[in-house]
Amino acid sequence: MRPIAALSRLLAVLALVSFVAGCAGKPSAPTAPTADEAKAVFATYLAGQAGIPPAPAFSLSGSMSFSRGNRSGRLNYRLFGDYGRTVRLDLTTPIGGAYASLFEDGQAFFAFVPSRNAVYRHADTRQGAAKLGMPLPFTLRELAELTSGRLGALVPDRYGAAKKTADGYQYTFSGKARFSSLTLDFAGNPRHLVGVGVEPWRIDLADDEAVPGMAAPVARKLTLTTPGGATLVVRVKTLQTRPTPYPAADLELPVPPTAVEHALDAAGDEPSLPEL
Image 1 (cartoon, rainbow, N blue to C red):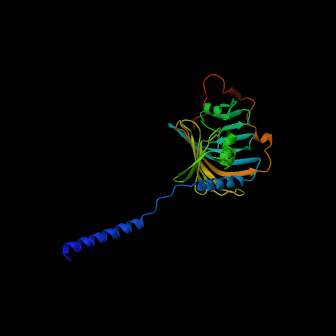
Image 2 (cartoon, rainbow, N blue to C red):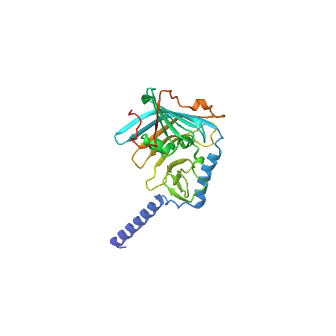
Image 3 (cartoon, rainbow, N blue to C red):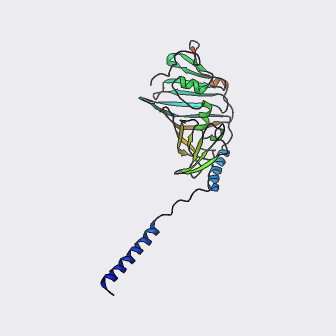
């Protein structure tokens, strides 16, 4: 055999071996999700929600960190009340001083600011909180449902479409749902919630932790991002349920008789909560 021909054949064999080895080492491309896979993950999520024991009342505590533009701050909170009825949110500074107490009963929203000896009221929690510089896209009751892992009270149990993402499956909803989409990881745990609208807000859920009596782990960190650039990070330190509703007196705001009441839905300047 001529040397040139032998060399050509040797190079061809080496090229073929290299090609085969390269193909064997490459991972296969991920397959497109099937409808059954998406349904199975969503069914796991629903089973976890169904396993949450019924409870008429709750108490949560932790911290809230917020930032908007050049403003930022941190507060400690206690959120407590009756699911579906009266809810109260007490905010204190990191050193323990009273900052504000918020209250809703399904008919009206109130905010008591001790440093001003003032009470602010509005017929709607979201609008009232926004006028105080707190652009929350949900009520105090909805905040309680989210932070205690009870998404079933807010998210539809049927989705319109499913799409596989890097960290799980995104389920979209239609109609009058409060959320446009919910993303679950492959284990069926909630990871992201997106609101409705042209520029919707978003909630990221992280730091899952087992809670006694709960069928699924509960996110201990919730990060809310609004279209206006505001960010609110809610960390849940304690979560407890109560077998009976709170006495009405326990949920009343600690308003002294000398406090001045202001209507937030009236025309005029919109106050904001004190600087931290």
